[in-house]
Length: 556
Image (cartoon, rainbow, N blue to C red):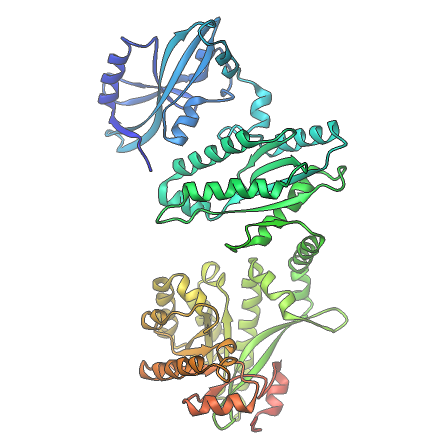
């Protein structure tokens, strides 16, 4: 992926001395800093004067050929004006090794030859003019409009052609950071440049193209023909061209049909971005059109996140508990869940806010509230003979594992409230464990070293991994409701669940079955050795006070 040659300072110095016999211009430049580079007599590298001065400029060149050559990792050429003369410049990217500083720098070797206007007059158009307006309106790498330039040009295009209907399209490369991590930023940059060139080459009349580093490629196109089909063709070609054995290249895109041309361009583009994000990780559907429901969802998400502080401060988040029972129906503990209420006291469905908060950093604050509520309740139960041995299990969201020192936080909570760590169970989702098994294993081991019991939640939901069981030392496996729903209709599911239950016992784990809703399910689960249950058949989530009042009653 990287064909750039590596040279020592001495080697490049010798090559430049030889090349001066063939070229009128031979120099090294660092296009990132817009500086000429020289190698001193002592064999060390030095930064010199601004490299654009040779073109009679006083600022970065609008279309810096050396910048593009270094980022694309390939040799590029163009014709430039030097006073009244023309010079054909070839930029060759090099990786220079500075042994004295034990460092590398990617720079460009610029080689120039005189050219007359009569030889190729068309090339004069490519001349750099240090055009400030170009730099303000264009992305330096792709040479497409930048965001602000795209907005201005798109507005002008729409106003000039009031009889045309337009579509704004936004397309982005999925997992682009992974691509850069695998092959280097320069390879990723070369793909961006290639896609930009393809867009320009395949563009239609009255079309405009831009690039925004956050949202991706921006396209304005009239609805003369099917824009979605045009864009899908471009995306499919890129997928075939850039997919490798290590990286499946794919793109996602969103389209917004301009119905109100007086809407600000930023809002139009934002709606196309919303449509693009709605595609998610789907491989089947890579393009989505904006509709009003997307905007409603976005507004709802902003409202949930924006009202979080007030909801928490006003006590409208509450801890509910769902009982867990043994095979005899005796209450042994509970899972802590969060419920939220409107100001009028009505319940807010958890599905309408949990996922939104999980995608924001607010989930860490909400989880901490539930953890502390559970610890305080266990401290209260410690003084009641009938509840002193009961436990409460609390959920740890994936973001908690990145934003919080989970083991230390739980240790401090137990110390603060004077409770035994063994009564505060810690639930980590299977997906979180699989995300980084080695790192999560260390977290689990730290929790266990403090005396906590660790539960793996959602086992059987989506893709489960038995290898996770072999690499994790968790104490409890919570089997998801989706697994239970199939055991009455699928003999295969029944046999798999029987094997999992047997396996957990063999490796010293305990199993809790979630989502038990009928006596038939309970009987089947008992027959294969399950002995701890949670589900609507026994009790729905309820306030802690209700759990305390019901303790002692058999739920069966």
